Amino acid sequence: MMRENPADLLPELFVLGAAVIGLLTGSFLPRTRQWIVAVLCTAGLMAGLVAAGLAARRADLMTFDAFMLDPITHVTRIVVLAATLLVIVLAMGPMRGHRRESEFYVLVLLTALGTIALGATSDLLVLVAAYLLASIPAYALAGFGKDAPGTEAALKYYLVGAFLGIFMLAGVTLLYGLGRGTSYEMLRAELGTAPGAAVTVGVVLLIAGLLFKAGAVPAHFWVPDVTEGAPPVVAAFVTTVPKIGAFAALYRFAAEALPPGTGDWPLLIAVIATATMTLGNLAAFAQNNVRRLLAYSTISQAGYLLVPIAVAGRTDLAEPALLFYLAAYAVTNIGAFAIVIAVGRDELSAYTALMRRSPLLAIALVICLLGLVGTPPTAVFVGKLLMFGAALDGRYTWLAIVAAVNSVASVFYYLRWIVPAFAKDREPVESLNRTAQWTAYLATAVSLALGIGSGLVLTLG
Image (cartoon, rainbow, N blue to C red):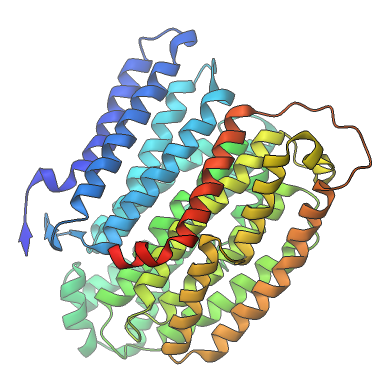
């Protein structure tokens, strides 16, 4: 079913409207009242969440010939809007009184809007536009602090994104010529008769840009530098939200645009997944900076998230595995970053005796970090369980084994962070950010709720 009704894009219109109104309002407000823009953006995100929830109850359809309204889009919308809302709440304290406070919130919303479009589009041209919208505001956010580390991080982020974006455009051009169109439906019908080698080259070039947004090997170099050099709130945002759209876009392209049996792209994705999760885990072992540790953790998580994409079209478990894992990862990763923001320091030693300062925060730390490992009853545990099932059902047993080994190995570097939190060798004196604390508690509670109530959530999906 296809139609052109602006009401179908109501969640996106709420986000866009909040960004535009926030930018205009912030231009006339004094610095001490820029917080009003945060309230406007929060209202837009909440309205978008409500609209996305209502839209999820409707039948699948395509609108404006390029925007799919199906479970992938519904989950992408809800997860991106909810994660962005948590980021806005986290930012209200650190950004209060900043001379560019309103611009920060607007850039966050525009990046979120591009991310949703990435996951929802079924047309190559819209995919490129969404890639740019999800990337350009994020480059500005990475250098928002205007200090040396932030400037270096933003430059690396931009250069890698621009370089791989060129490859992506080349892939789009090649696939357009081979498939005689840019819609995924047309590509699926035409690419089966096109020269296989040329199709493979086009696919590889296209996914290069999406792998950059996902933070996967070999496009992962920006992740640790941006995570450490950008403001902590920005690090939480760029390592979580853009990934959601990237993985949704990768899955949709693999499942809807590529004819069955096209080249060896599933094996290519499986090899990239193996390299990504292994490199992320190995690099995390040596980190004493918690933000860099989380950066390499997000790289390893990208490897796990690529597994359902490798078996797209080979098993019905691939889609629910990816969508549930995305939601679980988003809330757990933001919870971990909220704890970092609450403590206010990046050294592992700063978390010594955290249990004495804030028992609840220490417990949240344990749940979030062990949740990223995939420990029950957290949401990531269910996501990984579905991922293993998809790999086995898709006849990629070896990939499931690699993911299991990497999951076990990741326990050790997370324990390097957890164990000192329960030490009693010094008297803690540092104060904690209360807003970030409560955000961490909320994220932890949602992670547990998703894990315990996963049966109901999957049934509703």
